[in-house]
Length: 283
Image (cartoon, rainbow, N blue to C red; front, side, top):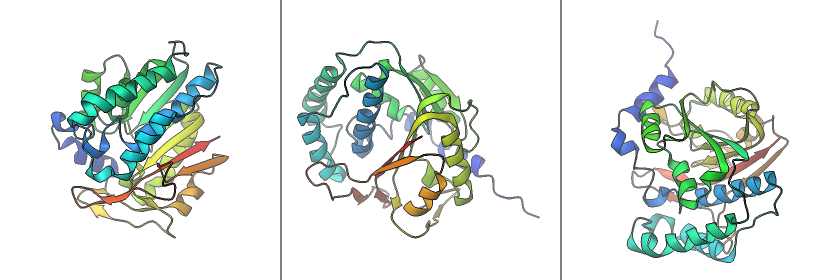
């Protein structure tokens, strides 16, 4: 009798088969750039507002320059090259100065505990560093792939990095103010989604932010197996039923203030469909 496939070992294999040098860079450039990606941009603003609220300072809102930059990048996401001279020599310094203005009234001590599930090789954390937001966050990163965690420990030894599985997290209940989950749920077998949702609900004290890369308003999940893991298209209405531990769910599926009905849908370099959305779940 054949044993049931071990999704955890399959996921580990699919990531650990790559070299650590590849894992350290492939989600830190192009359309996934940790500073310019529309999802990353939105997440930083959401976290900044939580940091400001925890410190008792006025709510921080996205300014005109940031709005226009996000609109421009979000509209032309597949064709932009964030690693080019325009971004590195002009746009990044400009936006970094915007973020320094946003942060100038905040004191330096950590005021918000954040757990980043599916942290990769520090993909989101690098965006926090580049924006200078990292110094306001008590950050912990978890990833199922040992290669990713080894990269994180080498690149950012000042932070806490854990090898772990979203379906069985080794952290206490309600131990983090915010739980960030980026592009994880689509890779899980459908039968594991409820466990993952329950763990996210369990470990966060206030809020969860979940980034999806293939989530649509469809009746049911569409299962797609790729080698030893999944790349499923997830149903919005089915996911809503999984997150019953949250009293409020806000879904951002557009990132563009000037074309507010335009979703970011495209095909990536490997001919995979991409549909970006960000869910904010509050207890």
